[in-house]
Length: 153
Image 1 (cartoon, one colour):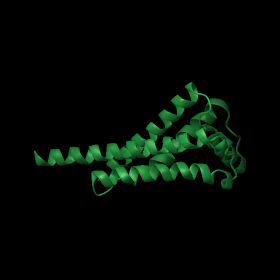
Image 2 (cartoon, helix red, strand yellow):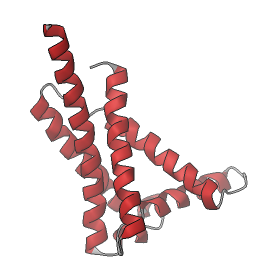
Image 3 (cartoon, one colour):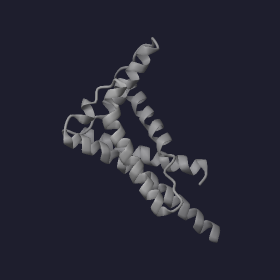
Image 4 (cartoon, helix red, strand yellow):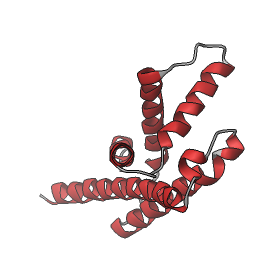
């Protein structure tokens, strides 16, 4: 697959992950607040450089953009040698990212309460990332299969 197709499939998974997260946090109770972890990281980054920390909607935009860019970069590696291996990679990469969010937040000096406060939020955090990985894999497979059909005609 080309770099552009890898980026497109990764971007689709990243957007799906963020849409799921945003819909859940705006409509449900006791769900992960991944955005709060990202916002804290943004504020600490700005503070460490002596820059004025963003707040409100500006902070939210920075965090959402950062999440989409980081997750897109991560999911670019989802394409496998076959449709099945791509789906397996999407599942594994998503689960790994979700578990990483749960276990690496506190060691990075960030408050992990928004994602680790209950068993439910922990499971949902991992599931959000798994969904993102599977969407990336699905789009990757679609693009691969479409290319095969086009090349046969």
